[in-house]
Image (tube, rainbow, N blue to C red; front, side):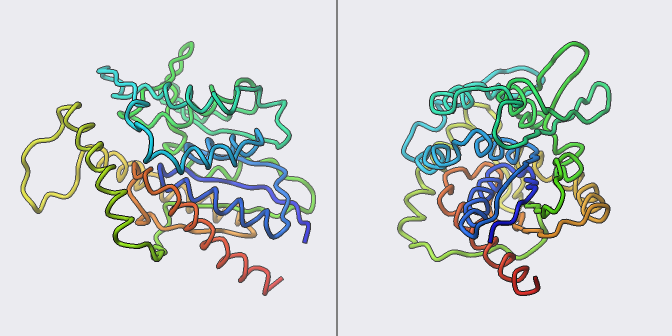
Amino acid sequence: MNRKIALVLSGGGARGIAHIGVIEELEKRGYVITSIAGTSMGALIGGMYAAGKLGEYKQWMCSLDKLKVFSLVDFTFSADGIVKGDKVLKAIKEFVPDTNIETLKVDYSATAADIENHKEIVYRSGSLYEAIRASIAIPMVITPVIKDNAIIVDGGVVNNLPIRNVTRNRGDLLVAVYVNANVQPIKLKISKKEEKEKKSVYLKKLNEFYEHLNIISPKPKKEKIGYFNLIDKTIVSASLQLVQLAIEKNPPDILVNISRDTCGTYDFYRAEELVEIGRQSAIKTLDEFERKN
């Protein structure tokens, strides 16, 4: 099989790591990605692929639990957000140099939102990292990009599955990957010992992170929602209808749905597992599509 596809990748925090597994399965089956449009984490993963560095990025992501993860968090006590997000991109630049979008081998776009002028922004040229930085600026978490008279934040605010922004070529297939879907999550068989070890290290660091922000306080056992979880649920809920409308208006030939309950938005320590979940989700969807076509 050698079919060309236009690929659309949604935002979804750590769940977006599953995009890697989907892309790997598509390539394994001989699909050729000719264009990519992404929002937030989808813009980041799509940008790494378009730059020809997805393998290096995957390796880096899967080693995060062995690194000082939170040394990459650049705190800022601004009213606009609590993290600048520049350190992470700087670390990635060490193995994926910045480049202009128009020079990439794969047609690429990143979607962001200008909340000052109430409009969507689609980056199709200029610095790849500037586009990614704007697209991942989760409101109240990562500081916005302020440029001229624009305040630019995460594209998930206006278009979390940017189907209309992907470049189409004659005869291609439209493939969309949505990582906030209301479907049952895939459960992988991982040893309890391995999961416990990874989770204990991560949660220790995460608790230190919360304490640093002074946002932890004693709360009743029944209270399950926290600061970041609240922001995540708000953005996902607000975007659900927009995503549904986008799918209805431009139905993908292949829609890979990954559960919003797969993991928390900031569970980056589960990178290896999330890649495999993306792969398994793609296998199931592609098998069904190929049987019918």
